[in-house]
Length: 189
Image 1 (cartoon, rainbow, N blue to C red):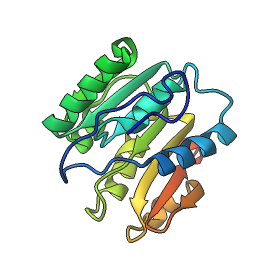
Image 2 (cartoon, one colour):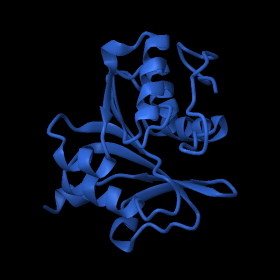
Image 3 (cartoon, one colour):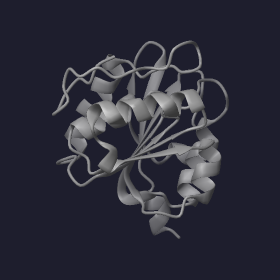
């Protein structure tokens, strides 16, 4: 797997061997970042949260495009080990933070800053997407103008309580990329 754009374009990223992780393909990463380029002016000074990180491909793509801070979260020791090796390879430890934790536990206990972008790619068909959305919303982890990018299987449906915050979707034959903003929810509090 390689980084597709930015200052690290073409650099190899190690991926997790076996069936424990499903890396976000180059095609899907390009779709996500092309859409984001149409929505935000620049990636500079953006703080990113990469949930269910796997090898960290999405977070490293964001680093290559100029973000100032990425937090990688994954419950797998194997994934975290790969992320750390990728951080070392790309020499980006100064802007990378790694959390070996279950995502729901991280979202419930995190007390740091809010994020500009949150990428969430939970294992498909495990009923994780709506709980992840709920925890991000309840704990106000996304800035008012922030964007949550959720990759999920077409078989998984976003609950109606969150559906109204989805402002854009992209699809492939098997997956949906949903772009979410909670600004209206926070305004109503």
